[in-house]
Length: 477
Image (cartoon, rainbow, N blue to C red; front, side):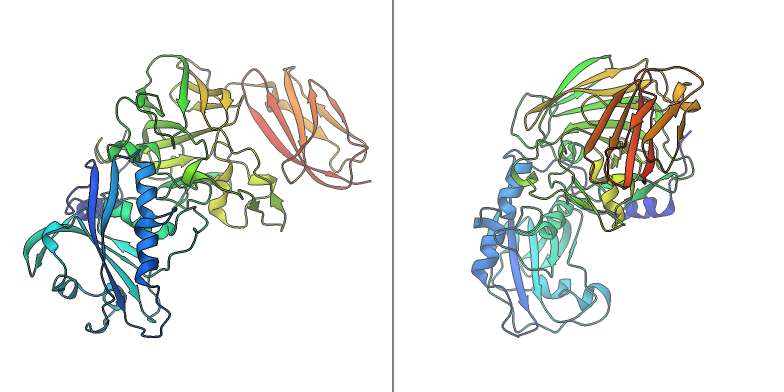
């Protein structure tokens, strides 16, 4: 049974439906007019040349980013106009205290409104409490001095960074808002676990420009499909058990599978007390190349230590919530490692999804669908192989792991593992940096006499059911 759509979701959809081009493909070069406004008059505005480099000519420009994520199917071009310095002042609250109103922007005599797909405002001002960016979700009608035309409108109050900001782009904010203007009316969120329950983390997909984008910047495969950048030639719908190869999402590979889609027989309700239901799963692999490259993927933990995220390659599983209609699916990244990252937890909650990818040899069970997804091969930067089974045992099947006892804790020399029902298992001990320091197979006693005092993580995995538990272990001598 479908959950009731929240008022907020209906409100969003009602508003978005007024914008032209929502969920429509976006192919070809989009002509944009960039209007800089200088209200501060303090000499600190970025030059026209810098704006041109940030948008069009720089190595990490918005233009290059759009061309890469669309596999060359979309681009932007246009003119950076001179700064407006003799315009009516900003006034009011909200939008009108941050950006010039439509009456101003549609009456600029040097702009040819008949040839543009989008109008971009770059505002240099000293008014506070303004968001770094804003955008329409597609084209809207404007009654300009040249007549009635439809175009997108975006605004920015942020500088470009050179050669790039943390996202490998001259401005991830500008890139984010421009993709909104292309008709993407939602953000890419994530499902992470907090106090034993999954919760939606806004902007939580760290691998998506429409989310927090600290681990990668390409939009997820669902967005690329909606915009027509991934076609039926690169997306494979899976309905039969087998092993499937997924190539890196960042690469231009016409005809090669870059995403798998599973239409779920039963709606997936991971957290029953919220409004999210998944109708489909999108499976993708990030090669972490191009604009998805990152030199630092480590996560600061809440206890002041650092989780070394040195193995980011794996399978991203993105749930698609299509409750409104099948053409309006919203993506949510599923954290396949819901335990606190590093055994402690991130000091900034969205970073809990930094370890979202399903790693080599790991299995994800899709509740209520008898589907299992296992990563069986990883060729870093190129492709991964995924085994999908449509008659898998549920993760709730009884396992010897349910009768497990681990003692003593704190331990000084030996950790004992005891259980009532025998089962095959591995027992891996990690330090708080995520480094494996001891690996054991079917061993009921783990020698820790040679380890220094401190906190460790003991991961015990049932090799038959893929169930696992993680316990914090203190070694004290």
